Length: 167
Length: 149
Image (tube, rainbow over all chains, first blue to last red; front, side, top):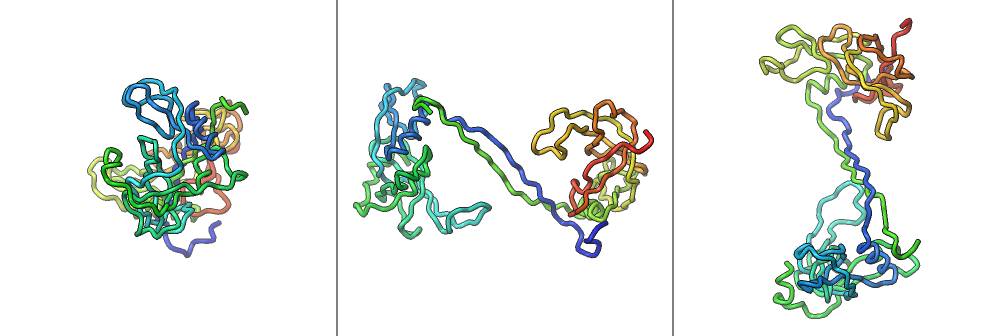
């Protein structure tokens, strides 16, 4: 009983791959995520090399020691590298082109990935100074989406020497 | 929730692939859509179901399609006591290799037997078609034990 005897032969099939995980953030990242609700960005400092990690993972990947010292870093920083997204894909939320960037927050020693908005995609560049645009407090949750995006501060660009170790 | 509790969240990765099937599997899928099961004849005369694109012995391209029966014999099986969400049935069922009448190889599919005690190697089963068919292996909803067994 087919209603399709006269239509074209089958040329393709749907073959979706779906992987359902349960992600456990761990102690350090859980504290980082909860501080986002308060508009704070929490990092951890390595007791040996002194590097400040955000988001914190509870240990220094280079030295292999626990990072118990917590420090707050700024919600502004410098674009070290970026990607202009021009390709459509399924479940895309943003309108292309948009910019995803690695941002070295002031006081941190590792970049944080986030969106750059309120500027044309072709104006984003390395060294650009940007600041977080937070969601209203009542809309925040323990997620990086509590920061809606970063936008240019209008400050002069950071000197390349100030972030060359992080590119 | 205490401030020291560890946060947990679902993380679902999904790749919505569409796969082109080519002329041989395309014809097999088209047959399923139309309620037919077609195999392909190999150089040694065997009928392969599902059809292979190339001869398993000579590696030559194959194109001689043969319609086979809609019932056959279970050659081996494994009972699933607790089906998981991606499984084709929500109740316990068997994964089975089924050699259809007229075929020389077995097709992997599902037998809805109700209970493990109803399953046996060499039992006969028959296709149960899905009501609305689109041209994919799930157009066969499952196989069921032939009546009178």
